Length: 151
Image (cartoon, rainbow, N blue to C red; front, side, top):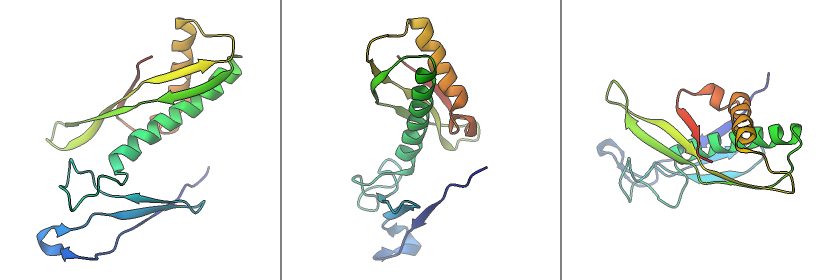
């Protein structure tokens, strides 16, 4: 077992908190010392109370899924003898309302572009690699969001 930590910090600096007119800007600090400027999504809370230049939780969620899938894919490809030279994914998360009318990230579509050194997997092998990556991905095993790969 392992633990993974993040410190989320927000301070009221201006605006009227009780009327909802306050900044949602905050920071995420990780155990490695990296601090990320974060905010609510402008799709959820209008500017100037959200900062579109900061990472929002929904973007981070999509990036987390895509990153975990990539890492699992690289491992699966290595085990199968496919040398990956580069992997780039333009993942898209979609928010919809659930059965209770509450917004949630209901699906994430991964769209990786993968370059190989020499041996390129067939369509069947690529499908098997992505399936294996999905099965091994810690994040995919932790969520109920539908995750698909468009390759």
